[in-house]
Image (tube, rainbow, N blue to C red; front, side):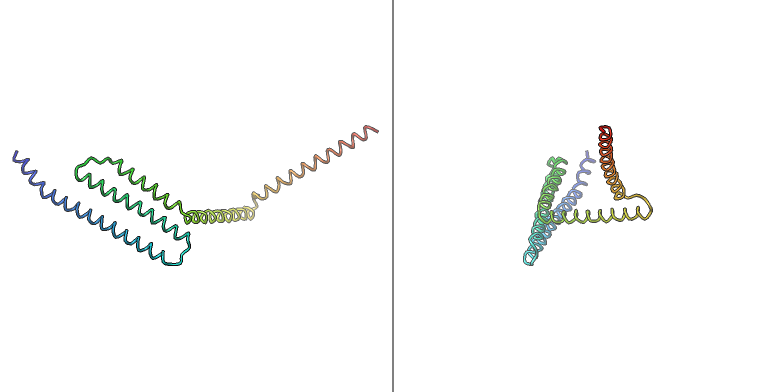
Length: 184
């Protein structure tokens, strides 16, 4: 029994140390969140005073709202960790759900802006232009190597259709001539 008493007495300094360490972590975490929030507020104010177009301002506001969603999730995580350290039963799925919901909400905040739409449109336009340039380069490479290109094959197809149309017209004329000759 004295071994148990010694083990419990020996755990007391460790518990105090762990408690101090946890307290320091939580204080640093809170201070970090506060500093980030202040930075974001000053950043938002500085852009609000300059002559930036509406789309950019809206995009920055969406990013700011997304950041706030992340900070709220971080605060909620902080509370869950604190509950866990107090010995309360905290389900790990709560952590997962917290961050999944925060991700969805943050993405909605950013993707719902006209700045996101403009950036997406610009990216798609750039990709289409790059694709056209790649297609052109491929066609030129094939042509320089003596291979038929897609354009060449399409042209041959169009010529074949035209030849079939002409052949059909000639056959109809021949059929009429034969009919006329048989009538005579």
